[in-house]
Every structure is written in C-alpha cells, then in structure tokens.
Image (cartoon, rainbow, N blue to C red; front, side, top):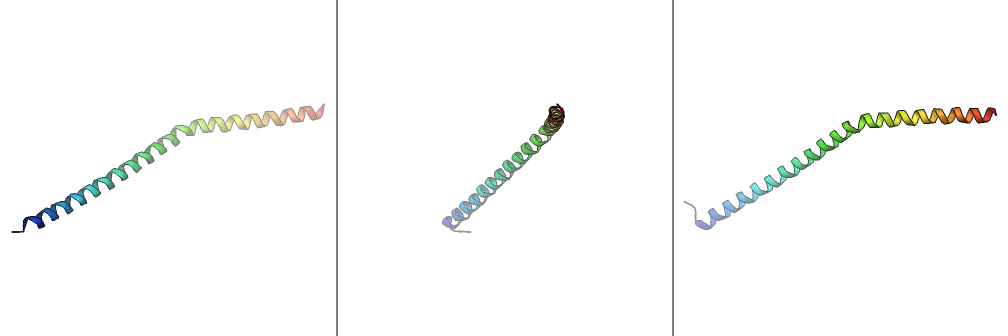
Length: 73
C-alpha cells in the first residue's frame, strides 16, 4: 500500500499526461481540419482558376489582334 501523498502525486502526474495528450490530439485534429479546408478550397477553386486562366488567354489574344490591326492601319 502506498502512502496517500505518493498516490496523489501519481494521480496528478497521470492527469497531467492525459491533459497533454488531449491537447496534442486537439492540435493535430485542428491541423487536419485546416488541411482538409485548404484541400477543399483548392479543389473548389481549380475550375474557377481554369476559367480565369482561359479568359486571360483570350484577352491576350484579343489584345495581340488589336495591336496587329492598329499597326496595319
């Protein structure tokens, strides 16, 4: 049988370990959620980015054609 003070210290240490483990798990879960949100945002933005890139390409072609047309005048 352990003296009451030592049992208290063991229980306190065990509680501290459990608290640290819970904090680490919460941090890891938060990082996972952040990564999931970033991944989802990237996947949702991909089609929009493709459309924007296509529009920029079309505008660049139009500018080139206009430059050529004005140069020919």
